Length: 431
Image 1: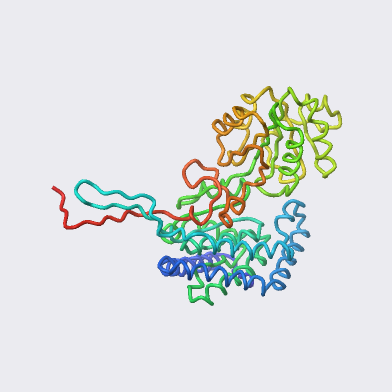
Image 2: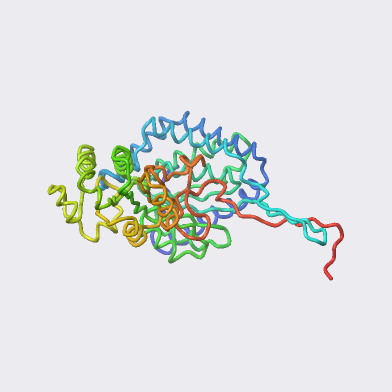
């Protein structure tokens, strides 16, 4: 797909509006057909798409190299470049992810509840597709495949608006996804990419309430805020990942070292990366030196409060802004706390309600943390980098929803459904 060139002025606005309206009409038609397609056909389309990704690997990697070159020339930071870049291993992961989604149980037609009333009416609540999903995301091309794959598996059509940085990569991946649909006789327009980098397209998507049933934004705070402010369509919000790992006084030292290092440094650019480590005062002097040495050896900058700096004078002084920052970089804020009550209060105050973890061998402390932390994902003795739909057995995810209304946490195929009530009677009339 080549970038659409839109004229300037009033004609440009009219042409873009017409383009988006056409995308919407085709998506609605495709959604109606896909909702009735057998589960096996939808799964087969994803397997065919995975094969197309592998067959088109050179083409996709060339497109991605173009995106990376443009982003580098524009001065994009290292963490965002890491999110953007594909290589053969990551591309194989994209293909495998599509196959994993295909292997999921069919999320459509599940009987969520059923009962019979005294008058003989049998009522069941059954899962059905949402319809047309608009997905607005920034510079991660793998989201293109994950979002498209999950939409197809759940019987929905997807309108994808990728970040400008990943425009060419996303276009190449969408071509592979559409090939999979075409080969299996399903409507290609079940997956469409907005064919322009013009940001006005986002504004138009947010007003397409007669066509798009749900909007899923995935990106930075400014994108999420704009979507929530302007959208006339219900939104599944994926806010920033300001994640914490709390090292409790009863933590196993070696377990804590391994978890903290992985939670921060495995991939610093993902939303599940730990941004703040909390540690109990009772073990700070004994456990911090080795943990900080591990982090520095891995290339991480450590920013600490006065108690942390007393243990390690080489630590950069932290300010309150550090407790509120999602770095998406090799930077970790470290704060000493006086027990689990203070740790829980800090996380609930400064966190983004995304993913938070405790490291402890104290079962009571672990259960309190699980109960009182108000986040979508709460872990005990595990890295926050497990905040991922694939790791949860969902095949993939569109994002991690941090809102309180469902869906919350990883949004996979089953979460991209709604339900309807089926009522079966035998001539009953209401008195």
